[in-house]
Image (cartoon, rainbow, N blue to C red; front, side, top):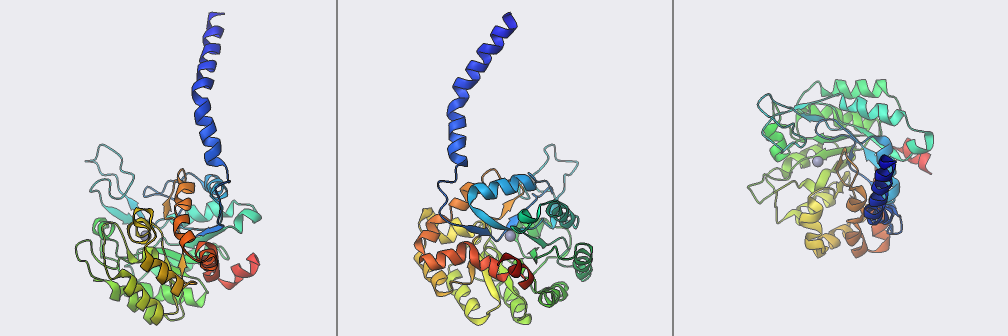
Length: 345
Ligand SMILES: [Zn+2]
């Protein structure tokens, strides 16, 4: 009797104190605030330990955030847990432990996507990325994945090339967008109508000029039939290049096979500093309305996905409605293979 009374009191206590939280959750989960249909052009299904909240959780987050299409790739790098480190690191910057190339990431993505229903499947766009970008044998992995999972892959990337601390912590040769190991992969992409997403820092964290721009430029120039997406517009943590807008304008004018994703730190740092759209960026995107795309660069966990997606609204609102629709959704869908675009129509 006494136990039952304790339980009753406990549930009353639980209800009274959790009701505001439940109401908050319900409002956070409502789709009332959704004003744009978004295609997320840049999402990692796993984190730096190759762990994930799972595909159901991702689909739920997409639904809640008004995202009807999503690029999904793994992560070709994994953080090692060294004997000396008492705490298991989760993020690549969390401690000084090294990082190594991890090909099974593509299998993790493939297995998750192959388990989807047909209607769910049309919203998820898997890219393969699990190769060492400095290994001239990397093309063999691409071919193997293509053979193992025919008709699954819709793109290649995010290829991890020059990436500040991530590069410094990774074992072996430094990756770069114009590395000879990537030439056969770019050629394979052109041959199979696959877009390629490349992370290639435009500079180092110390030099405020486009120190490494030529690496991305050489890749794009050498492969005019390959559709390149330059991840984060070449920006990474602590990279500041005052000429960025002019550099991008020049690249976009010169190379029609180049697109830009505005995911990750470039968005709050350069595009909407202090939540205010930078007018030079607005002008640049309006000048090339079909060359930019929204992406979140979410890494394996989808708890704050809606917040991340909604953060792009302030920039989309600063564009003309036509450009906003292209940047939010259509530009990403338009670079996918023709066989995929045919299915979407
Ligand atoms: Zn990246």
